[in-house]
Structure formats: structure tokens, C-alpha cells
Length: 133
Image (tube, rainbow, N blue to C red; front, side, top):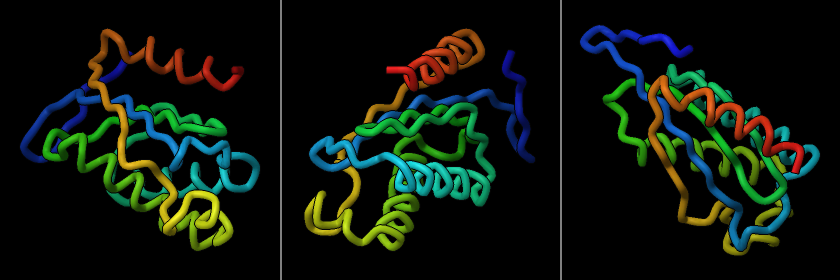
């Protein structure tokens, strides 16, 4: 069961399920690249004070379930996660820029859904089960 979190001015329970893909949905998120993506996403969350509840890096997409204070718009969270990870991964693996063109890693689109304590367990279960497919 999720617990309410507090900031100086708010008590909240805001969880976001986010999904995004590499440019052209290329299956490039494997091996050390997948590990680098995961590490960069965890570092970004830690730096911002956000909690990653579940994370799965699949060969052609990323599932992220994160809790963040309500002062952050979901689009801002996605922008931070995608920007932070793209910069670090492309620096570590410069050959990926050729596979995705123009030095970008992620497609511009993404999915984001909100979830409170009622469906948080369902989303966590879905993300964990997704790794077997």
C-alpha cells in the first residue's frame, strides 16, 4: 500500500506511469545500454528527490512508475528523465546516435498516466510482468 508523502506545503500521493520509446522504436536498449539507461534514470530521480517505484528497461521501450511532489507537472518529469538519460547514454555510447539519427535517443512522444493507491499495485505488477515478454 502506498503511503502519503509530505513536503513543506503539501501532503500528496501522486504516482505516474510513464512509457517512452527509442527513436524509430529500435531495439537498442539491451546489455550495457539498458544498464546505463536504468542508472541514469535512478540518478535523475535521486537528484530531484523523486521515488522510482518500478522501472523496466525493455529492448524497445521504458516503463517507469514514479512518485513526485505535485509541484512537478508530469510533462516536466518526462522531460527530465528523457533528457537526463539521453545525454548520459549518448555520451557513453556515441554509436547509438547513428542508429537513431541526429544524435537523439528518444522519440518525442510518450505515455503518462496517473495512479493513486488504488491502482499502484496493478501498475507495479504490470511493469514487473512485462520483463518476461
